[in-house]
Length: 341
Image 1 (cartoon, rainbow, N blue to C red):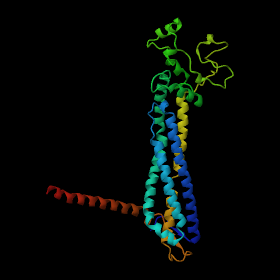
Image 2: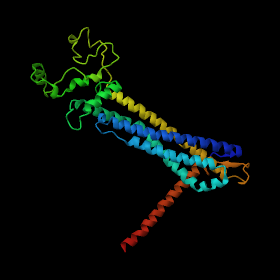
Image 3: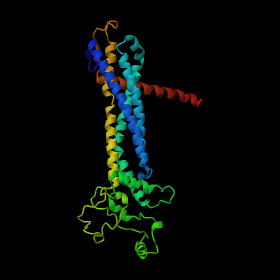
């Protein structure tokens, strides 16, 4: 007894073929979109590489590029089969390829699920990489003369301006590091010397932030120095006043950007899932194979998802796997005496 049998006439077969053709070609467009998103995601990771301490993983964008290319090929082939299915002469040349094609679709669906799953699971890895990378970026902000870190200041400033953020967790992260190079400190100045000597590690620390932390939307001119010193500014109280610098940390801002991107991509990947296409193609091929009179397109036919019931199909599959296992054992046993000789 076939699993989920359906009766088909000519009108139903034509509608099914046309519907599947449309779904397959829409999936080709989504495949192109996935390929483009994979390239875009890879470029974005490269752009923010310094913010991630060059430890970012390109597994997801590489998988997206692969999945996008495969989606275009698989769905274009499926669309062509559906287009030729109502012509017996054209369909005959595709018929031997349909079983391998459906197996390929099963493997492709597994790859799609893996890619979608990684889009959601890898977000935590991105968060940890950003946390460590931004911490080091702030630490090396002042090293404009050090090879390999020359552009760290520029990159971090542009990131803070673009994402409207300040520091790793918040603006107070800048209070804990010396972000002005010794090259620009006047060591003959007593105030500078005292501040350096008063620090255990010999760093020039201050309650200030770089200019890129300033919020241009604030009506008050930017207060970026002596942020916690109320007496240094007129009519100012840092405990109750809304500061005119960005209060959001860059880790939160960048993670929000990447996580929303990865969530959207993961959802898009699930849209390419071929279960509906595969079921429809199986119905179409079985309906065409069981036509009582292939020369009469008006005749009725039966379509199904499985030739036998689910239980019987799994039983046959297990039996084939056991037979394959026994065959391998016999081959290995036959090779052993030859090796001994």
